[in-house]
Image (cartoon, one colour):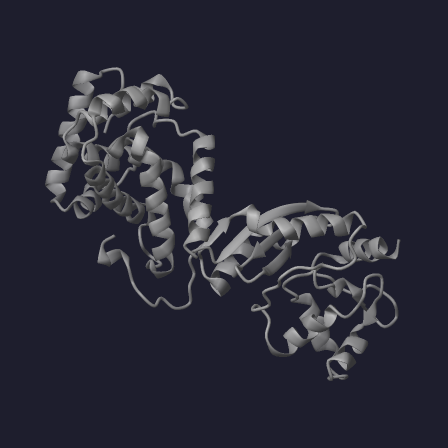
Length: 173
Length: 194
């Protein structure tokens, strides 16, 4: 997480129980994880994200944007996972995806597949903006780029998705 | 936003939540575990630290505000984690079914200090089916004139039922006040009298 989101030795702790953070953002973070690392590694990314968040939670600034904070952690965990997986045989992953995502409907599986084909920068920008609803300014801080670059990556990414899978993306930006 | 958003099954989140609880326990990051329990005196919020049972709260106070108070007092690393409360639930169910007269549970009394702690500790010495007046409890803790303070300490007992503040009644025999309501107090006293 960025240092701006953290403040140590907060006194007079007013944070709600962490359970409410899981309840409110658990599904959004899982969507982001599935989009960014794929349905197979998403569970590990989600688990590592929320465990790290739980550890840091008492020091989170009271006025922090909790969703952006969680996506920031998830972004780092996704990078770690992708590195350690060292781009496992894509064919195997592609075969397993259907099975792992058996609870999601076919449309969602197609979406994860389509996202997997995007460049990393576009995939993360699409996930953080179109799935988590974060503004481009926040996304730029998370991915270490500029607001304009984040906006461009997201719009290029969503345009590619629309072109290749016109039935997937119904809504406007 | 992509519309509709990809579906997330509640079952998938439940599995991940359980994994999070297990990892938090393993890493010593679960300051407070809680669950609720339906009982003859209404829904109870049960909360435990690694040390022991720290809070039993009646539904009337509102589970959300009881949890918020625990977060402020004990830290916000709080998760719905029923397993840590298994022995508490088992013993409470035995108590309500009339087969248990004594609780054998690890307690964490860090929410009470000083005189109030002396009072709630004294409650353990009032046996099942017996009662004491507020004045008698005050005398037992060595402050015979602190009758009202005993009443306050009982009202703020963090673990009612387990530490039996319901066994402290008015000297005229009336049940007196109770955090769970007078009806709950009557019910507990009649359960123990039967």
